[in-house]
Length: 287
Length: 168
Image (tube, rainbow over all chains, first blue to last red):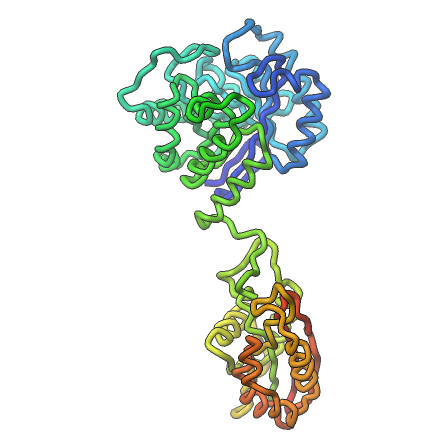
């Protein structure tokens, strides 16, 4: 199915890189490297040069921490979205927020996608997406409160829960008026999940692809990679790319990433192995 | 009147082996243009692989033109020179390859039928040249004149030609 992210459309055989741009002083990977507006803007420019189709701008780190109210979140992202919009008209702008009020403001400023990492915690977010013709990412969190860590959450069948919740969320978005081709589902690795859950979700990601909804995966440098390989945050690229390969082979469409070039190469390689992408330039043995 | 064209049996010309960036773009342009120039009734002559390449090129172009007169079939001959022109060539660098290709290329462009008949097919096989169709080409070129040499290069260590002839 063609994917429409507000003013941008993509063919169904095209995998997309969604580059993470944090307007936060404390996110786990970059630790505030793009907290300053100009630094964040420079990061946008860099990932665009690296070929990212989407930037995912976030004003609040996912992990627990200092309470960030609506006004502060808006101050961090709304004007920034407007600046990115005017500088990069061809770029898809996603905003990582669960709040409808913030979603409304960033869509006004030109955002194309509302990336709700917290599984519909604010029920009005779908209405905001519908009102602006924006796309929405429907994640599974197991019903946890935003910015909480999973603690002793268990599932009879984690993928069954992911499928049920993300599809229910997608249906809710559809009923609210979000276009069918503008709804994306995301299992949300590590959100409401321990490492074993995230590994199983990765292993069974084809079940999500089989629903027909475009699948977004956010694997980048996460704790399930760190715990699986016993490596700290700065040493998780290889594990991330291994997980990325598994998701790419199954056909996940959008990759939310810190490292654009490495992920793009990984996905391109797997996409070609899967027969969905031609080699860049092959002549060996056929000249 | 009949027309004769030569193209190489380069497998990269097959749709199944298409890349995102065409590694043989100039060759493809020349080959398709030459094939398009042929009339609607074309016999493809070449080795097994060569005929596949020829048939694929024919499939890709919409050929118009007047219906052929009986006995005036055009010919698409698929052949190429050595595959030993550089160290990275499929057959590695063979010092005999350049002279072999020069001789064959000049004989084709003439066309010099006597020289073409003298071409050493055995040496050609050693140099991984696809010259199986050469005897048939010599027959077809009797009385023919060169129209154009559209392509003559060895971009990947393999000598390719695209040429056209016309016979009254």
